[in-house]
Length: 432
Image (tube, rainbow, N blue to C red; front, side):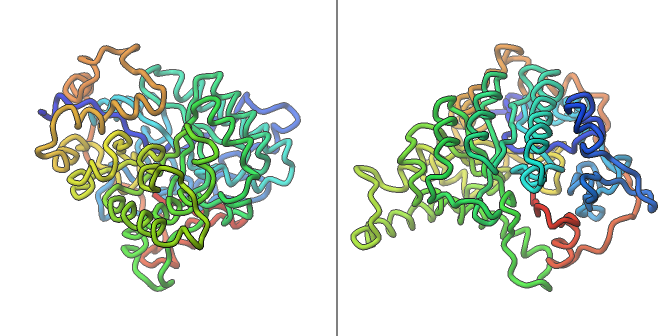
C-alpha cells in the first residue's frame, strides 16, 4: 500500500478545553461556581475551580514545537497550536496529517473525570460533567460529522448514575466512555468488586467501549524521585500491563460477555508475552487460586474483548497475529509529545512494511469503525478520506515549528514531573 492510499482513524488524541466549554451549558445556580479560565500575575493561564488552580492549562500540548522546547506545559493558550483547543483548526491539522477521524480524551477534567469526582457537591459535579459531555458531543464532534468518535465522561462516584449517563450519551450517538485503569487508586472499588455492575451492564446494553487510558488512576510507574524523566516515559505502558492483568483476572469480562475495553496509549509490543504469561499463570495455578475461564484461555478472552492501539510499534505489528489482529487500532496522540503530527503516515509506514493491504486496513481504520460503531464513509466517501485526498485539501496549513515563551519550570526528573502535573488539590496526575 502507498502512503497516500492509507485511511487513518486515531483512537487516542486529546482536547485542551477552550475557555467557553461550560458557557451556557451549566444550570444557572452553578454558573458562578463553574470552572473558569483565569490569567495569573505571571502571564500564565489556569483553570480555577472551587478555589483551586490547575498547574498546566495545556498539559503537554506541545505539537508543532521544536523537540527541545517540549515540556509539561504550555501554560497559556498563546503557546499552543490552535488545533489543540479549536475544533476548526483541529480538523485542518487532521487534514494536513492525513487523518480522517479522531477520538479525543479530556485534559482539565482528567482522563476519568477526576476533577468532578473530587467535587464535594455531587449534584453540581453531575451537572458539570453532563455539560462537558454535551459540549463534547454537540460542539466538538457535532460540528464535523464523520471526523470524530465521541468519547464521554461518567460520574465514577455512583455506578447507578454512571449507567444512566452511558444510556444518555448513547442516545446522542456516543459509544465510548472513559474509566480508570485502576479505580482502587482513586479510593473507589476495584475491578474485582461487583459495585460497578450497573455500569458494566449499561455498557453491555449499548455496546459502549470502556476506555482505560494510562495515567487515569492518578498513578504512574515511578522508580525513584531522582530518576530522569526518560525512565517514567519509557515505563508508561507498564500501567496498562498492570491494568490488563487486573481486568483479565477480574470477573468483569466473564460476567458481562460482549462489551469491549480499550487499553489506551500503551502500545502493543508487550502483549504477546503478556498473553503467554497469563495463560501460564492460569494453567499452572488455577487449582489453588480458583480461577475458571471455562473452555477458554485468558489470552483468548483478551483478544476477543480488549482493544489495543499503537503509534509506532515495529515489534507489535510484526507479531500482530499473536496480539490479536481484529482488535488492533492506531493512534496519533495529538497534541502530546509522543504524537507524530504532521508526518504520521510516513512514520506509521515504517511499522507496516510487508503487511498485506487488508491487514493494514484493519489496523488503520476498519477495526476502529466496527468497534466504535462509527461510519465516516456515510458522510465522506472513502476516496475522499485517504491520506492523499485529505492532504490535498490542506496544502495551506502551516506545519512548521513555532517558537514559544520560556515560561516552564525545570522538569528533568520524575519528581519535577509529578510536581508540575499535580493540581493544588492533589488532583489527577495524567500522562501521555
